[in-house]
Image (tube, rainbow, N blue to C red):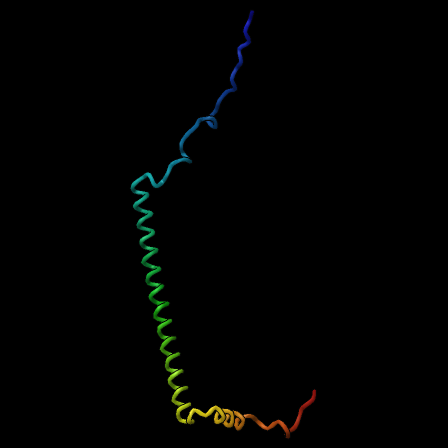
Length: 104
């Protein structure tokens, strides 16, 4: 009885198994410290950006308070009469009854 011996295919470089793509970068201390450094720099930039945005919000809030104060002063001068505002508004509207019209 003769056994047939199976020949395995010839293996090349493509068949060599490595751990090249499976390395966990966090397991290397220098890579982990580099990532922490990058995160700290990003955090510092975001804190600076937030402070600038907060400064702009404060400026807008200050202006809104000024507007409300000025509006209150004007209403006080008018005697806080709602009809006085209507009278002033109607006085500013142009008279549309007369004049001329241009047709093209």
